[in-house]
Image 1 (tube, each protein chain N blue to C red):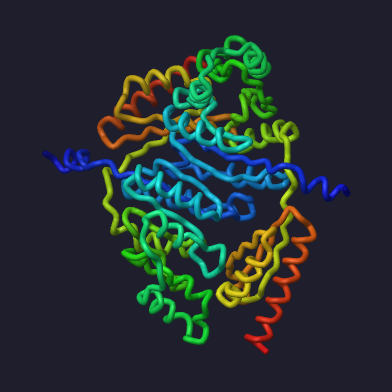
Image 2 (image 1 turned 120 degrees about the vertical axis):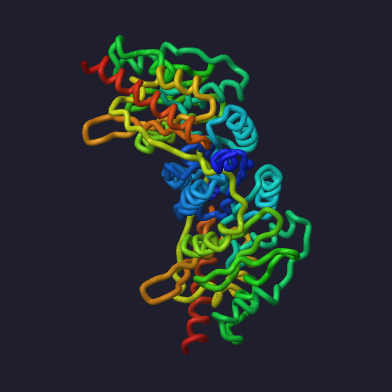
Length: 254
Length: 254
């Protein structure tokens, strides 16, 4: 068995993101975390399968979290772990797992690196409330930690802090075979190649072919994205797509 | 009963967004529709309560759509209504509603405005497949229509087209009382005001108070967002927040 064969037999690792925050649902804040985490996971061979955005309501967080953590290898949450009354993620996660929650001495120590004792008030101590059995995720930006419990990773909503936490979490995750991807720019409208592309997709079952129209400086154009865990199958499908596009270009312009 | 009283008694209208697309989950494409629709709905008095992003898989689309349409006044979907094999939204919506799907003469007519007969090939005709009983949503950008069936509005994924469709759909929606919102910049860190803010939130049950930290040119700062359907209750809560912030500023700096 070659290295490639071995890597192809690694099991698929899946993930979901749970974005927690009224401010995203009201449109006041535009989410920047979904796209960032999606790209990060793809790059390390984890398949993001679902995203949900829910409001700051305990019951909504619990039911979504329980649905997602039962279904995917990992769940990443963002938002709701700050010092104010609307930060209810930690309590909701504890309730979802049916464990107690209390001020965690390790988290208090982390907060103490930033806040002198007279500033470590009731509100800031809220950020040290961690579900029993959870491991902390260090926060190099503003000290208040995230945590992981079971297969759930609880991270901040502020993008810079979330990204710092993901850098801590990433290397600890098990990863599957990275999905390889190649993009072919068609120089044609999507509808020009749709039928032939569908036939190629049907005859290449181990690759996923996506088609994304866009407007270029010369008019409507299409990116064909070919994805697979298998480099040989990917190359075969890309060749087929390129040959088809060339034939269509000739037919339409020649 | 004054006009204000009448507007306060309008029922709450809720919504969910279902984003359909492998390209969002892979991180290749960064979603721009969630934030846009969220802001649009908030502005017309519709409460966005949940967002889900799912892959291009019929079963995933059906189960998410059925969960969301049973729960909210409206569901808005984006993506998957183009001319290629990976555009499976219309078929999935038909299956979710248990209705037939076929080429719709009205949709073919719309496509004919853009494509001469010899270009209206099998792929492009895919965009005329509409579930039985659905009404079309005009597409002023590229003609291929969206549609609505029951409480579900099916729109394009390309932001410019989605936005044009939302402009068609928006005026047809029933709307609730618009949630009023006022933002107070604290000039303090979130943890400085967290405890007092929580007390204000508790004593103002008809308003929702959110707290959002950010970094300004002068250091860490916090926006307190006060939201309510009731303008008097909103004003009372804003006054309480401002008084609290002034007191905290004096205490910390004075």
